[in-house]
Image (cartoon, rainbow, N blue to C red):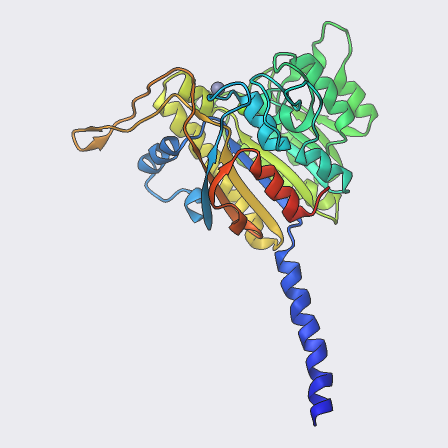
Length: 353
Ligand code: MG
Ligand code: ZN
């Protein structure tokens, strides 16, 4: 009798333990960055939208400190580098530490581990935030050099603006042709993007920045996110790392334009919805949504019982920004974090070296 119980209980125990391990292991990461997305920007979007934001479905929420190595108020290069590599650096640096030494990003480490990788942005793919995941340069302004780093990155998918940095170069090189020779499909429209379901894709959809939502960008960001998830999940059975940037919330802050802030944030939130739904359907997927810094010093003082947007600067501010997490491993993203902690937590959950 005792022996029978023992025989029966061993496989059951092993089975349940195996299931628990599977659920805990993070296989896919969708890392989403709202450039300039402070807590007030999120609140303004909540007030503008009648139904809840996708972000409100986040199961764990934390706060992030954003200061750089050179200033209490970061730029998007130093904060992008911190969020990508876990290293503080000076404002302007792309994927380099304070001593101008290249540092490896979580995307590069994912690629090394055999995962599929991608970046999506609504500004150029050579702009500071996506560049921090792919390139190494002492200055964010060197976008023609940053474009060259895409050739060496082995990245599976990149979608955003930046045709001129790849194809209209003073050195006469056409990096899109060089990428094609490396096996990439190069597209210049969302229709072309939607035709690709596996393999390598580089989509350059505007000369530099993508148009704003108000200028007619449409659903490019959520649609590109959905398509990239299809491609990346087809490209590697080991999993993937995807960075998605809502790049132009920042521009709304710099322009002190509350309508732009809200429209760009709602567009980013539509991409968050795509990511959360993917995580629901694919256990082992972690979604982390955060910002690189706040832009505009946005507040919402009361006027006639309404919370009215007011800005305090045309630049960035040093205030903490929110961190939202969803899916497998989400519970690690609570409390007050440094921006450099986020990639370290992701790498630990993915078991990257
Ligand atoms: Mg950016
Ligand atoms: Zn900015």
